[in-house]
Length: 172
Image (cartoon, rainbow, N blue to C red; front, side):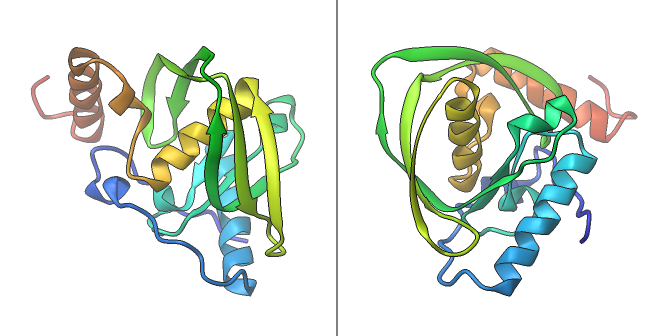
């Protein structure tokens, strides 16, 4: 399909709260294919539609991508309906926050309801990297970046680095 440009922070469109998909049709399936192509081209494991400038509640995840396999999952209107009290810490990065990596604490296990690319309701219980990735991507749909989970100082340093990457002539 098509590789679309991925927005990078501090682009204000990344702070948009995405709207529900009303009907899963060919346009949404094309969006999903474009998102998967864009994610693979950027060597990512997850991408939310808002990251390519489409403020719809759609995301794709493929944890198998790191082993050179392609097995993308599409999640439409995903909603976390349960999260464990137990927390897990993973080092996170983001295609919209290039070259920034840090540790984020999130619920270790979740239950997520969503529609698949055929528009069928699904329920998924996830833990480990999948739970973290789903939470990270759902955050995008709510206008939240992973750096928003960091301390004020770390977030400020990340934003300065991103601004410098976008405009190298700016003083640090």
